[in-house]
Image (tube, rainbow, N blue to C red; front, side, top):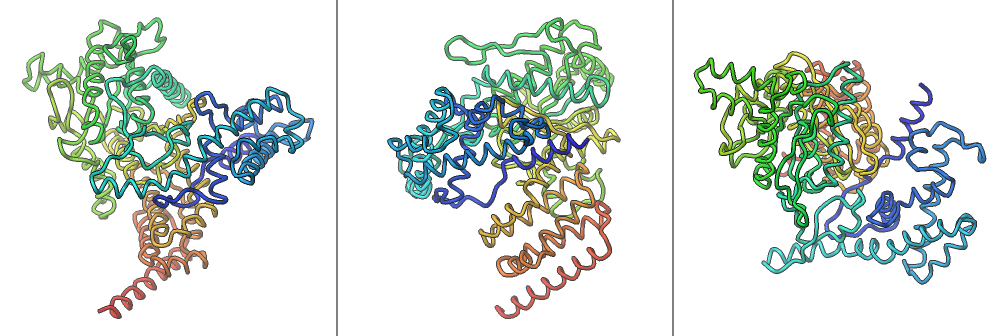
Length: 586
């Protein structure tokens, strides 16, 4: 247990944590520049090796082995693997500090030899280190400095002038070559999704979902719900689309040369070595608008699998289609229409509508129970897509699909944002969990696949992920201090963190009493933070107190009496101050 705890804390310690907000057109400077450069070299960038991996190999280790076994002892130095990671991170800082000191001049890389531990390294080690440093000097640093063009190009765009195009994606996830920002970024041709590389990641994500569910429930999941967003699939080149297909037991066929997806191929059960899992997708409005060809591909895959003459216990799609189509026939539909309607697995908003409805409901406090949240989620998302059908409203069909789910999934491909950054994460994924809880009467297993590091894909439950972000970022003094540099906006974002945590708790029960207590302690009771909030954005402080009191009122949090009393005092105090300000201005 102690070893597991040590590994968990080491994981939190080494997570990517935001320490402020991006200011349009302002390149990172001073300490932020050093942290950015460490972040952008943390993973491999094409054929440029990972800095942490190169440093770890000098000791004969794989960096991930150190991270996953951080409590073991490295006997030559008599320190833990976790302490060795700290040593490697310090060396990484030393290298980047040296590059900064010499103005990122490639001609002065010989100064690295002044570091004793570099001088003692092998020729292979020195060569890899030089390759990384040259990449920083010639590519990463100059492109980071071009961040200033964000403002210039924004103005050019407003004047209808040409802006240089550039690819979209997450620079911190092995995509440093995506820099500079401020260009007219483009996505990807959806007809190429998923790419062969994304297919491999999608398979890994699918296998991890199945393995995790079996370890927790002792059986295969029959039905899985997955949230599909356009931006995430553009950045990852269709990894979630690939996971959808792989769970069904279908692989894409790519055209030689263009790599365009031109068809589907059923994976034989002997090769698959498991049943075909039934998958339902809740797509975003942007996914609907930007990826119609992908929607049709997924719909064809479901129909293809449903028509296979296989044992129902080896093909859950066919099992459910047969049962559902018989019910629809009994309601008066023809055999053909019943089969078509029963096979819809792509659901979203009606044409021209965006969102899941849940965020607005929770923000307006216009709900009493989980059933109210489920009703809104079903009402907004019950529009079916597939074939010639473009948003047919089938609430009973969608409701039935939600009520059958064993697992829900929302994958993340970068750490630039997370499940507490925006209410969309909870609206789509949390709303799906709430719908299952209400309709089925029990909570599904809910997972977040993390493919930020393509070489180390991991799977967390929603509850685990919420606590990881809460501990590593939300109540991290570095995060709070970073937000305090941004005045009104920083305060508003901090209030949003509490709001989003509360909303996730309403849909998915991710919060515990101690977490709410910590929010109260760190965000509202801390004298320094409270004084700053009163100065830059008293409305944010009032909102924090209001949301925490609502959590207690709704029974999501059993607040300590003294905590509740102090929150009420803060709320009334800020309300009085805001009234005084209003009177002064009037």
